[in-house]
Image (cartoon, rainbow, N blue to C red; front, side):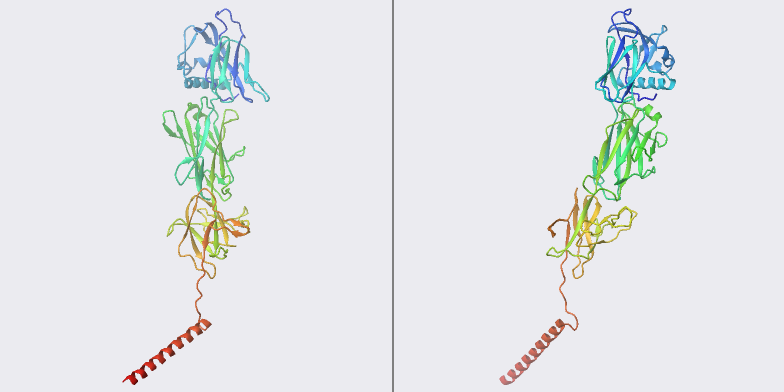
Length: 496
């Protein structure tokens, strides 16, 4: 039987003041704080031969555990004198007692030592406690499949174990690329690699640790042991000393999961045997925000939980990754929507890097995704994709999959008859979509990223009425000037 090694101490049961007064099968262990579905098992390591209440106790090895108490390691915790009496010589702190309990239970499982009694709390059980009765007095070890670390108290012949629920804890965080901070949520572009870390806080009696991580459809996990997937796992002890674990020795990464998660990290039993209470295991990994990402709204969730013992799980820990969209609204000076413009996006007002976009396609990779007005949409391109111009259809176009930040639109093609912008248009995305708004079909000024175009002045053409008019006016001016000159000449002659 495989169990999570979880109980901290062995148990002394005392019947009365007189060593001669107690009888076999007159002791009990009550577990306070039981959980449905948890199996509890008890082992008697030592027999209580005699005692003086609250003062002195005489123990001898239970015959089933003779081999265990002959082990060299066992004798670092207890001393056995020539008469066979056992005395505890180890430290009496929780960590030391947990080490001993873990070692003893491993020995029992390896050598087939059966528990004195065991019980699984059934569905529908309404009590908070369960009592093992009819026990011979002695020093008992209590195991459970819940992985809960229990403290023990002793009162006369009846002992009460209070489950303290010392279970492992897992905490997940995601890195915000704009600041480098680790937090519960972040923002990202489609195509961006998002960094995660999950920290396991080890509890006493650790056994069978498996980390399960489940990503939403908008996040793609792909483990290759290098720049993607699980990139490192660090073990930190109580002194703050860090050791990087070795894949396929200390742990393995499983990508073909049967429980619906995206991947599992299975820690080796050899590693787990070395873990102490309050140690930490920090799992660092990443995933790509893909084209199926939820835009704004509820974000793209990532869940992690730790399986321990036999089918017991920690409370899940969650992160969310958000990405956003913006609308380009192309209008005249009177807010009339214009077709025919084309744009590209940059990260600077002058020069800088182009932020590539591609058409947003459905799952078949061929059908364009349309907005509510039936216009094609675009998304942020991945690093391996070649960007295209954003073509405005119907006066409005939507681009999805953008991180927070300041961006610049450059108009590369203006609508026919309109002047092209001479400088880039700046806009900002800050924790939300930059959406165009309409009221009864009328565009609401200031919504979306509005780009206004002005018409140019019509210049005259050769052979047109404008040219004739200019030529006629010129001839009149020339004739007028000639008449004026002749008149002045004649007047000068008369004066002379």
